[in-house]
Image (cartoon, rainbow, N blue to C red; front, top):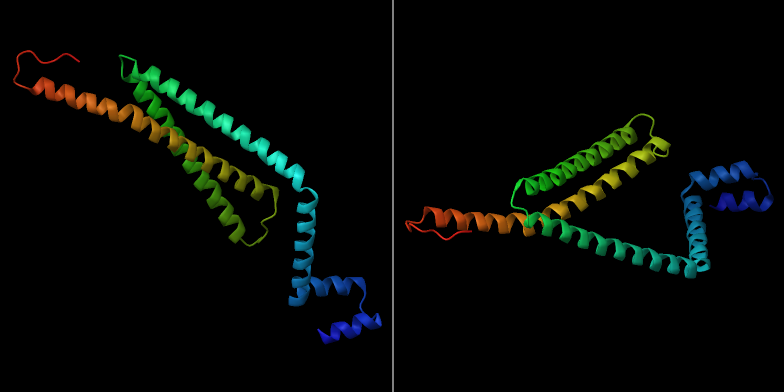
Length: 183
């Protein structure tokens, strides 16, 4: 550190050696981190109000999409529960289970390929391919999460009542009563 002060004050350090010192010394990296933190704080302070308005608009959009999803999910469940044929229920659950499994496998595949590429000899994690892999991994993970939510809600609202109804029907049919109740 003392040598840097002497060289810099005497003008013996040119721009390329100064940049090299900033990138390769502990003190230089700390200085660069502090400058980056100050710049990030200034940018946030400068754009705080527009970012807040944008965040509120995005939150309102997410809230309306969640409301629409809940309404459409309830509508689908209501129409499937009213069906006399249980095949639509099986198809509904099988479709969402397939989407869940496919998106989970794709997310794990993309994350695995990214991990192999980062651990490989190139040691570069800044390429466009790596960025696409990470984005696809996160999008597939979100799709898997949403399909899991649909499956769990579908299970609670479709499968459990149907299973209970089936158990009651089975109990009624196996009863010794000659006139079992009609379901």
